[in-house]
Image 1 (tube, rainbow, N blue to C red):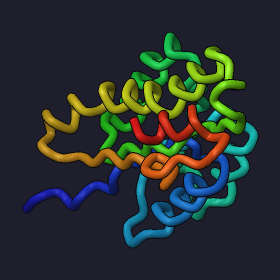
Image 2 (image 1 turned 180 degrees about the vertical axis):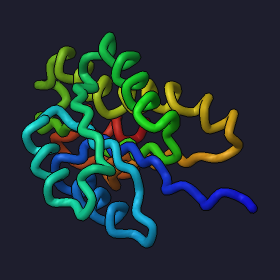
Image 3 (image 1 turned 135 degrees about the vertical axis):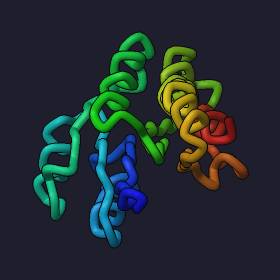
Image 4 (image 1 turned 180 degrees about the horizontal axis):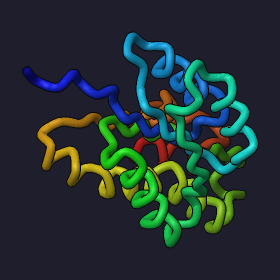
Length: 163
């Protein structure tokens, strides 16, 4: 007799508020639930969310700052070692920017791209090999309509979401 299916291991970045927080509730309350890895910069907000979910023992809080690329290999390893796999990666974390492009300095542009684009790429590259090996997995990238149609004062943000 085959073993019963395991609940998916779902890693949600940007889980401390907004879409990420809503997704955590959705996955936790789905039939059969999910094993959740919740990431964002604020450990306190993640712990509060964990406590609000129906089965907090099925939740791992894993703080991360996607603007610190040298820390990401260690974070990826911690995520993968918790349950031995990640079945769904939700790249939801992001930061915004509001200024005219001529008034936006390069460090700001680089930070927006680091978090919104390169951080998502790094996490994806870190979990995809296991997905390929197991023959299943999902990558969910949360974007913005601004990635298709830029609005005034959001040049770096629009570029990062388009990427």
